[in-house]
Image (tube, rainbow, N blue to C red; front, side, top):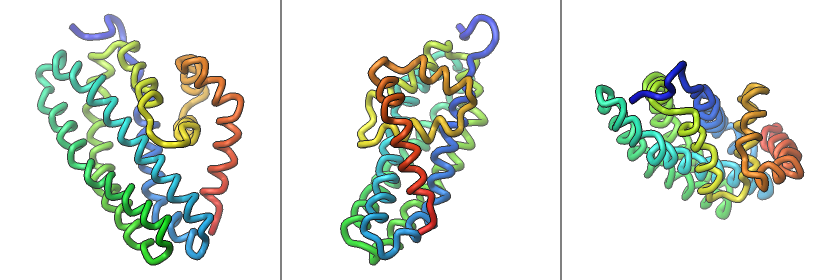
Length: 218
């Protein structure tokens, strides 16, 4: 049985979420280089990427729990595509762990480990971006056909509920930058009241201040 009965579920938000990973990883070498000689900036950039990887982990987990099983059950003729995406998720686990390790080392050890931090970001970028491209061309269209809006809408809540970083408002802000105004409004509507209150009372302002610092020239 396909969902929804009429029309397609709007899954366009996934592409905008993927933009966060693409742009952040592409900026990695410049961001790391901008922190040379500055303990304060190095801590800022390292924390930025540690939060990004925490988000990537829960993003993948959400797909594995909420999307892939339903597609395997309903889009039987496309099961091999779903299995391939799941396999690609497994491939990046070690790369994500390596980014977390090298970022922590860089933060504590200083400039001597900057090259390893950049290399870990590049290694992840080289594997992750083709995976994101593949998902956008196969998984996302399948989800629009076979998942209901309510089923697809569980992804943001799962990510927020399982996020292990210390700045959920940073991730929310990065995503909202890529959203249309309508998508931003829908995002707020779907948030639990405490999360919405957090964003409106301090999260948005904190994000604006922090992201300006992250993106400033070193």
